[in-house]
Image (cartoon, rainbow, N blue to C red; front, side, top):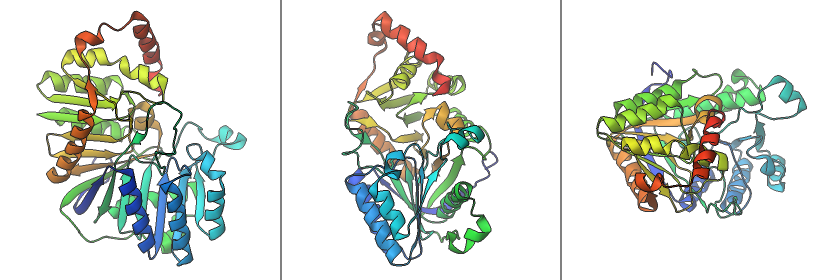
Amino acid sequence: EALVGFPSIQGNELQLMDDFESVFESIIADLNRAKRTCHLEFYIWYAGGMADRVVEALIRAKQRGVVCRVLIDAIGSKEFLRSRLAQQLMDSGVQLVASLPVGPLQVLMTRADLRNHRKIIVIDGEIAYTGSQNLVDPRFFKQDEGVGQWVDAMVRMEGPSVEALAGIFMEGWELDTGEGLEALEATSDVHPVPAKGGAAVQVVPSGPGFRPEAIHQLLLTTIYGARKELVMTTPYFVPDDTLLTALVSAAHRGVEVIIVVPFKVDSRLAHYASRSLFDDLLSAGVQIAGFKGGLLHTKSITVDGELCVFGSVNLDMRSLYLDFEISLFVYDPDFTQEVRVLQAKYIKDSEMMDLNEWRKRPAIERFVENAAHLVGPLL
């Protein structure tokens, strides 16, 4: 709390979902039951498949008199913003806003490299979703990249911590629209929510306007606090030296450290920059698993079966220092165990790296990795 200003709050009910169809069906069902507000914030909204059914659900909600606000990143969702579906949303009265727009004037006054990478849904100020999944049907998204379908996970939450997510959405909305929080107050639906379960959740927003390095410091504290086991999944693994040292130190003090990354990723630069770190990690006893079931996009950390970190943050400099992100620090053994079971499923579909075999890779690969490592801080 001292680092981020948001306390850990008891009384939350969390439902982990790792199947995209179940995620969409749950979201659509909740949108269909909405009575007052539907607030959605995503980095990528991509037309096709079940994502189009969300458009239909929002239009129906608006027709019932529900206030619907959609905030999507201007770069990540640029194709959707030009689509007929986006026009249908706006024609129906759904408020659709491009977050952090980029144009000739904006480039002169703002940083185009700052993006809104969050994934948040808040319905009636009482139900929330967050995690790694963008508003895309993976059967229709980036099918020509050669990395397989994207593999994600989301959490559905009810309880007091929903209020924090509702407030974070409205702050982002005000930042992009300039409407003013006082003017928005009547329809913001930010209000206390009664306890529903037993999980303690700390909602951690990060990005411009929040305390610099807060999420980075929390992750360092989490890693150094591990005593028995630390398992993490991330699509892009390009940490700075302090995080790398923390992981190596954990392995040296006897913690079982397992890092699960995609065997293939959609960024060659990130792929090679990540691999440039493997020698130090493997030499220290860190286990590295290359997931072969698609592009593993889930961002999760479990520690000693007690603490779980879950959200939108990748382990790279962009996520840690530049982009608007959202993370949940969950202090609950039951939910942590659910995430650990999911991580075990990912590991089962992975190839474990062997240090001796790794050191036999061609010299040209080492050269490319070292070159990519030089630009790692820019990723």
